[in-house]
Amino acid sequence: SSAFQSLEKPYYVTTPIFYVNADPHIGHMYSMVLADVLKRWQTLKGRRALLCTGTDEHGLKVQQAAARAGVPPKQFCDETAGVFLDLAKRSGLANDFFIRTTDPDHIAAARAIWRRLRRKGYIYQSQHSGWYCVSDETFYPTALVEKRMDPTTGKVEVASVETGKMVEWTEERNYHFRMTAVRDRLLQFYKENPEFIVPAARLNDVVHWVTNHLEDLSISRPASRLTWAVPVPEDESQTVYVWVDALVNYLTKAGYPERWAPEEAKEVAAQAELEGTETAEAVLIDGNVQVGVHTENDAPLPPPLRTVALTPAQRARQEGGGWPADVHVIGKDILRFHAVYWPALLLALDLPLPKQLLSHAHWTLGRKKMSKSVGNVVNPFYAMDRFGVDAMRYYLVHDGGIEDDGDYGNEHIVDRYKKGLQGGLGNLLGRITRTTRWNVREAVEVKGATSFTEAAGASNESVQRQVQSIQGVALLASEHMDRLDPRSALHSIMDVVYQTNRFLQETAPWDLAKQLQTSPNDEMLQSRLHTSVYLTAEALRVVGILLQPVMPVKATEVLDILGVSQEKRGFAQAHLGADSDYGVSMKSPGRSKDGGLFPPLPVED
Ligand code: ME8
Image (cartoon, rainbow, N blue to C red; front, top):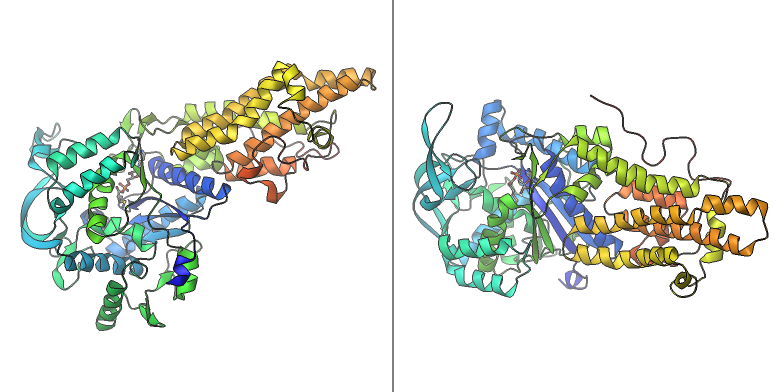
């Protein structure tokens, strides 16, 4: 355990784990990219960071989808989980883990959590009746359902007031979680952590719900109805409610139960030996329990994941005790599960609570929420084929809603691409590097030593504005990121691009270069040309560094073209004058006759 403690806790960010009932759409890519940007931002700042994404594979919704497809559930899950894994890869996610809730280490963690809850007296059995919604995988209180008539069939049915999804009356005997026992602690927690939810306004709804609607939670179903689920420990007639199973994923990849509950871990190992089944990889090493760990990033999936047993030290290094999560990125549709059920479970378990939730708004298509079950979805793979990975990441972060929903449209993407990327960033880089009229390297060498904030800057408004813009952006972007607002951070970075285009227009280095041809000894002219080129290159260098989390590939290209060395691409270098040892030579401008950094988009109908 000393090996665990000696390491600083890495920043830990997660996406929801997605149901495998249907293929991913733009909404899923959005959550993934937001989380990835948050992770990469921390890495840029020099902190170790972990990102977990994956798939939620149990439950009635998936069970029914598999049945409809006429495929055994595991095979059905393998196929769609493979598509989500592809999406993570195609989107350029730097995820450390890809969890599947059907993984043995996760099943072991879910069962360990159950045992711990039971041991602590939070689980009891009772008769349960209520309105269950398969689509939302949740029971709704009677006050939150309504009768309505199906407009096509004329049949009267009952549906959730909040989501409009059909519910059905169920009566069964099952296990309950004493959630009401932690009501006061929950309310206290919200009070002490007003920044728990971003955007903050959503906390009010949560407090209202906890105050008015909190009940004990049904956390199992009869195995006869829900077969595709984690079996309840010591009671095979019941299976674990999919949301309890799903939420635990965040702990699985933080090393639960070994790191947090050695008692439960030993039970898991003992049980595995008895059953010889789902947790067969659990072994005892040096008296410590080691549940088999799957290789993550590059594990082929499907077919089967490779299972390796790590020593505690290796594991500590790999998983690093990410818990508590710094931020769970989620859609606002699953806020209650993360803001109420999850903290309630953790309070009962005596485990630390996640620090923050980033609950983002939805992408709509024709103003209707993009949704797998409705089918009004955009395929993210096609979108990336057409516009490029980084252009899509840029669009999603730039226009994606945090507070308010955003309407998706190809015309908006084209617009952003032309204005921000082609006309802005790409154009700027091309104009400054693809010319023989000046030498960026020379300008950097000459001007890199000058203090623009005082001397040269003060005399000229254009220069002053440009200097301020470059100097201010790292802090500004950082403040936005700290508030979990990547969208505003990106806007503030792009403002430097637009400002620099104006600066280039104002200082017109091409005119200065022309004048220098006729009077080559004019030092004033030469100095003005150097200033113009230098402050443009500096803006691009700083912007290139700060854009890495949003557009990892394109930002790297920017820095490559500018000739910025690998060790000088961190946050510490993202200010004016931090690097005076870069710059392309005039004889080999970064790129020549191709379409540039952002080539024209293919014309399509
Ligand atoms: O709810 N716009 O999985 P899910 C933006 N398995 N984001 C969207 C979106 C849209 N139109 N549609 C979906 C589940 N999302 C559970 C989660 S977590 C322990 C278990 C994103 O496949 C958004 O993040 O229905 C939303 O919360 C999530 O996908 C729901 O994915």
